[in-house]
View 1 (cartoon, rainbow, N blue to C red):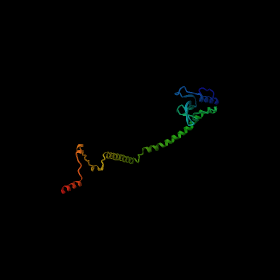
View 2 (cartoon, rainbow, N blue to C red; view 1 turned 90 degrees about the vertical axis):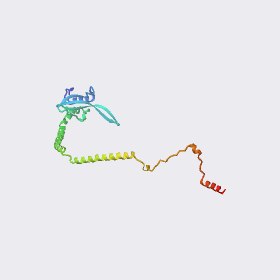
View 3 (cartoon, rainbow, N blue to C red; view 1 turned 135 degrees about the vertical axis):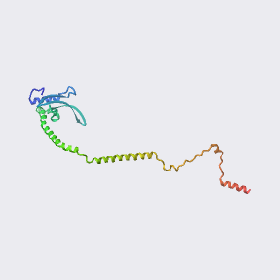
View 4 (cartoon, one colour; view 1 turned 180 degrees about the vertical axis):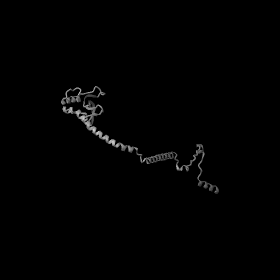
Length: 209
């Protein structure tokens, strides 16, 4: 540790606990500070924003976390999500040792995954190089869909044009009835004709006389 000369585990632990509780960066951009090195790893403290849900409400606050970073690889290693044991200085002092100890286990894990991927590479290359068996069928299906879409569009357009130009079926039978207008003066001069029965009686009276 840069600010601790003692190799006593409890002293180192108390120093880390104090940093965890009180350290603040000079600015938001400078949110990380190197605090030492160990076994070829750089040791850092970083201020991190965290959120917790309480009574259905989210509250944000800042916490300091610790991690070790490999100088050659730049890979970061942490323990307990970056939080040290603030109740026990000796356990707090072992934080970076616990983080670094994960290197071997993580290395074995990723080397195993890498070997599995390398074994699968030839098989994947064969699958990629193999032609798609259903390609001709897929092309035909695409053409059928395209033809069907055009047919549906044509029918819709024809139906719309028919509706716009529609003529009633009895339109040919309907004839316009002429309207005769009479002059008001002529209508007053015109006398109503006598009923046919009255005309016959008058004719009989003339003959009898």
